[in-house]
Image 1 (spheres, rainbow, N blue to C red):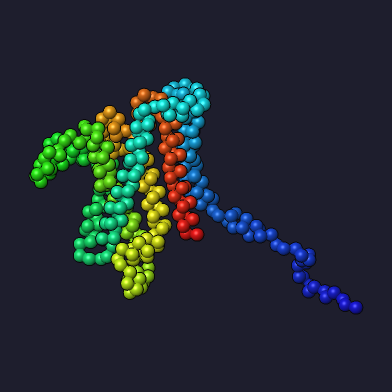
Image 2 (cartoon, helix red, strand yellow):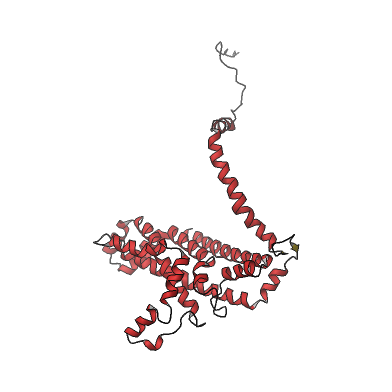
Length: 316
């Protein structure tokens, strides 16, 4: 017959099968956080909720109302969105935004990536070229727009350059011609954006493993094959960031278009953002303007989430 072994005197009694609570240590850790730390965390959170998230959420409700900013909004349901489908200016702005996303995004990424590859390796003067290419990002979009507006004047530098190289027949009033105004503004925006994209890709190229590229070169891979099959797969994270930034910048572009053309001539450079501003603050139709803002938000979400899903599937 076995007998139970007595516990040493003074030892704490433990019930069989009892496991200490895991949350106790975590709870004690939270209680040890100084109140000033909670203050530094909660105050910015409250400011963000009050000035960013609440206005954004409120705009969804305002898009369902008819409101001129005075008095109580009148709830009208989806009438604003129904009116958008038959609004010719909104249709023109939507088409222009598609052209802008493709042209602005495509040219910025291609030129920025080419510049990053060309300036990735250290050589004499490379720092100067990087700084010079990135310099336009220092200026605001409004200043950039005014600068390019002067260049596009009939007596400006663009027409003067065409005259110098013997292409004077191509000179025109670039911002007053509905067939060229949008593309003229697009060139100015790409000129500013490509330096930013170059910096992002330069950071990505610094993280590429050079031994893989050297091994592929020893196996006879061409420079293009090494870049496309070795370098680009290692920059999927950078590509996701570049895509998201480009799409968001394309859909929220306002300053440079407003500074150069204000959406004209004849709405040929009207984008969703400029039309939203004119509707909400020039004609003071805040409900209709909020509906356009909701469309911009949904387009950005669809583009970005769709790309991220596709990128995650490729990684799997």
